[in-house]
Amino acid sequence: MARKMRDEREELFWDGVIQGMPLFAKELIAGGVAGGVAKTAVAPLERVKILFQTRRAEYHSVGLLGSFNKIAKTEGPLGFYRGNGASVARIVPYAALHYMAYEQYRRWIAYSFPEIGGGPILDLVAGSFSGGTAVLFTYPLDLVRTKLAYEVVGTPKLNAKGMMIPSEGAYKGILDCFSKTYRGAGLRGLYRGVAPSLYGIFPYAGLKFYFYEEMKSRVPEEHKKGIMVKLVCGSIAGLLGQTFTYPLDVVRRQMQVQQLSASNSAEMKGTMESLVTIVRKQGQGYKQLFSGLSINYLKVVPSVAIGFTVYDTVKAFLRVPSRDEAGIEVVTNQPRSLGRLLFLRQR
Image (cartoon, rainbow, N blue to C red; front, top):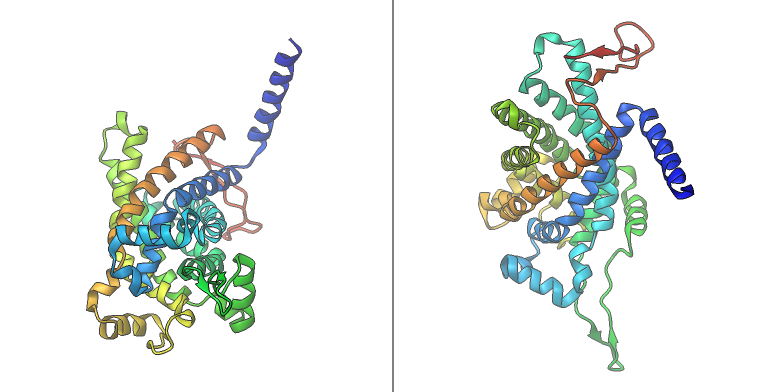
């Protein structure tokens, strides 16, 4: 009896906490959890993809399965998750900001510019701006993740006394990579490659939401709330958006690890110049701009599937209202700025 009463009190307590949370906080939590779980699930594919993108010759030559075997033999199971700590540290705030900003931008645009309507164009604009917002706030973590994933720990070697010594990388961990990068090039070093990231994320994030909402709008009303419908629509949208913007992702990765790669490689000073350099001087022509894309396809489908499933589950647990039921909150202090507090019920 006492245990039942205690359980009821705890349930009432958490009900009060959830009810008292603002909508944006619930969306932050749901997006962050979804991003972290999805990223960890596909971390091995992400590691191999980065090694392909950054032209690690010893991995290009053996292909996908050979790369998995090589990492397993030289670095063990944990090698597949090298850089994943930085990746999750980045993706949690990134996904949280991305989802929350998308919902907030969408509500604000729908209220401020009703002539746009509530169709896919609204999702294209809101998705683009939310992607750019998330990238600007979390880019240094993405750069650190790439540098750590790019490092390859070799097999132990014999020293002069015949003893085995482990091969060491340039960085000991996330904080060490941050520290050395900042000491070497300052804040500019932490944002190296951010331009192609922004060029890529604006169309990618916008197209992803555009395709997702456009396809979902063609699904019969009675099936729209099904998890499988969301997973299929989201996966296809992610694949289409990624294909259009993938070359910019390759440029970003190569700019991020440029100082770690061979000294005789051509220096990359800008996005367009880097695109031309990759096509002309890296031996594979336009193919290098899509290096690792097949792995990315393998990664995107489960990542989006897991992400949408977890996001929906956490939103349901936090009792986030549907878009048709949610109010539009625009916080501002003065008329005609983003600061007036409004609550508009959509139906």
